[in-house]
Amino acid sequence: MADIRNEPVVVIGLGRFGSALALELAKRGTEVLGIDSQPKTVQSLVGQLPHVITADSTDIEALRQLGVGDFHRAVVAIGTDIQASILTTSLLSELGIPDIWAKAVSGQHRNILTRVGAHHVIAPEHDMGERTAHLLTGRILDYVEVDADFAVIKTKPPHDVVGMPLRESRLRSRWGVTVVAVKPEAAVGGRRPGFTHATPDTVLSYGDLILVVGPVDNVERFAAAE
Ligand code: ADP
Image 1 (tube, helix red, strand yellow):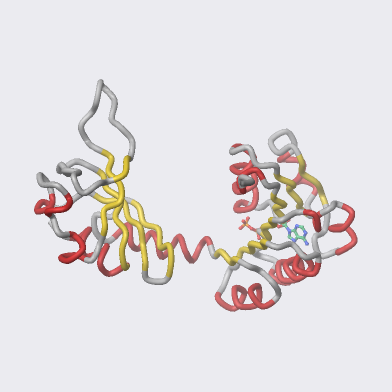
Image 2: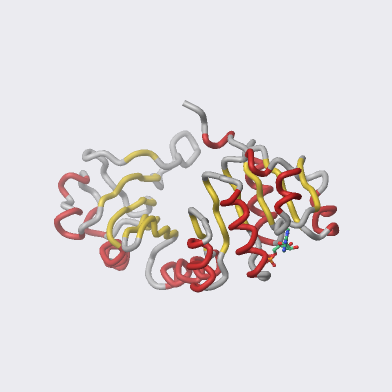
């Protein structure tokens, strides 16, 4: 099966969000074509991104010449210029790109992007604000909402689930959550091990880190328990 990580990605708009995304993809071995309308922005990335070019993405001929239509995945990372973001997304859709991601700066922007052909819309500032709220309230060390009302959190186990195998702590019936992975506090051979899958036999200790999945209310109640 083809590894999706190796499929090239075109990133349009190399501002703070787009450039961070493009550089991270390149670092992980994905081939990236970066496009921005500002020559200065493009210049600043030459040497860091192997393929980076100045072009106006609202010009369909320019997109065709760059072979953008041959990509399977594209990210429209233009935020401030909403008109350019919408037009670019609709042109990518017209070129038949099967997996279009676009960045939105408002709810209205999000709706329009979906209507003109974006398959995934991300709203980094809005989502990060919501996520930070969850991190600020309670003992949640990391929080990802994977669907409406379903989340994965990183936290420490409350007192009454430590010292016994997970199967005996009745997490599902009491809290409606599942512990999927554990990073033990105890060092093995001088090094702290990474996360491993939790099993019914796993026994948690106070300082362990755990990944817990479940409905948002349930994981939050669980993380707030002493
Ligand atoms: P951020 O908040 O991530 O920095 P911005 O919306 O400020 O996002 O930046 C978007 C980038 O998109 C800028 O570098 C800008 O030059 C670029 N951009 C804007 N319009 C176009 C366009 N028509 N074609 C290509 N790039 C564009």
